[in-house]
Amino acid sequence: MQVRRMAPALAVSLMATLAPALATAPASAAPAPSAVPPPAHAPQKLSWQGCGPTLPASLECATVKVPLDYRRPTGKKLDIAISRIAATNPAKRRGVLLINPGGPGTWGLDMPAYLHGAFPASVQERYDLIGFDPRGVGSSSPLTCGLNPAELDGERAYTPQAFDQHVAVTRSIADKCRNKYGEEFLQQFNTRNTARDLDVIRGALGERKISLLGYSYGTYLGAVYAQMFPRGVDRFILDSAVDPADVWRDSFRTWAPAAEQAFKRWASWTAARSATYGLGDTPAEVSQSFWRIVAQADREPIRVGSTLLTGTQIRANTRTAFFKVRAGAEAVVNLKKAAAGEPTPELPPLWGWDDNGTAMFWTVACGDVAWQKNPETYRKDAVRETVRYPLYGDYNSNIAPCAFWGKTAEPTTVVDNDVPALILQNEWDSQTPLSNAHGLRRALDGARMVTVDEGEGHGVYGTGVSTCAEDIANTYLTTGKLPAKDVSCQANPAQQLRKGTAVPRPLPIR
Image (cartoon, rainbow, N blue to C red):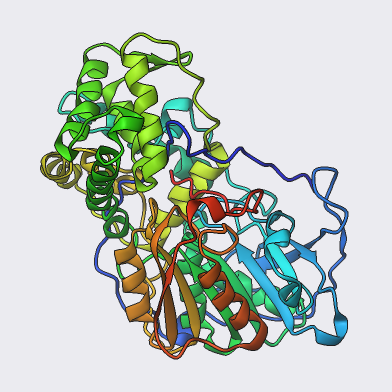
């Protein structure tokens, strides 16, 4: 099997993260158990083989068959691609550890090889590391909608003049997907069915329970699985959390206020180092330096490397950089040089969506929850949040394809249980702000939460951001022991961050 890889975003210069503008109705109770039959765990003989030339020989791949529609378990089947690096000590083997890097719409077949070096020997010897491409993604019966570059570009800053165009583009995304596949087919690609697929994978592997390391969207997938299949849960680590009560729009609308808080922190940090960065002696002066560049670029785009950027593009591309104060300062210094007409380095490689990733992001997001259908709601929210959160509020609240999507197949999952789990969260996370993790913690009574004080970036386990947090996670995976209560860990000093650590891919939404 061929596995794609895309370059992760770098934090040294401008960083781009594609953020959705989503809208939901209140989550409703999960359907009665009889609404959808449980997965049929008929024995499946898995044929393990090499995964192709792009991955190490230690990684094996196989295919699991799952129903397209779990209400019709004997009907059409989908292929789910899974991968494995076997436990290194059969005598100590505990079971399987599934890994999901986030999304929705992100492949994960390569994750065991990608993260293998981040696991200590005590974990490697106990678990088969299992990767998988979720249904509709990558090598798992992939969906594509024939989207053009404008439809793949998810960053849409609200302006009164551009709103009608944004409505047309987002409507086109929904229309293309629906016209190609039909509404009933698309309804089967949602988080609840992906959780059901995990349980079929569990059965196909011959396991009574599964352990899971889920990043970002993977925390929501893990929480939904725990709600639907609590007896299948062994040891779950949910890293960089999504609040299951707020999927999807309300969860991501926390990005705008979180970005403002990060910007204020960055301005204070940078002002204290004015001799180094030359952006101002006070937080107000540093802030003004940035907004002067934005205003200049909105009048006439400035050239960074060989790329022309408007002010609105600068706001979107630097949002995540401000969560890492040093990266934010370096990015704005680079912008200041570009605004003065000086040559600057090329922008770093950025994560980008292809047709499959974009189509599956919207298919899952629109299939998980009931959406507000009136475009005027989005417009009003964007107008209001442009004023309240000038850095990113207009992006956060703008129109989205789910305004034109069809009905959901079943109600949104209400997560409320006491299944044990470990939640890991950086204080300054550009993708899933701390408030989201508190929401997940409220939903999981049996969980414990580790907050990395002053932790920056998206992802804790495997990033080297906190030895304290990783030690707690490794103890949990090895012994099953959770902390007695929620814990705060300190972030490692910058000079102690591990070099060459396997870092989970940044969440590329939209």
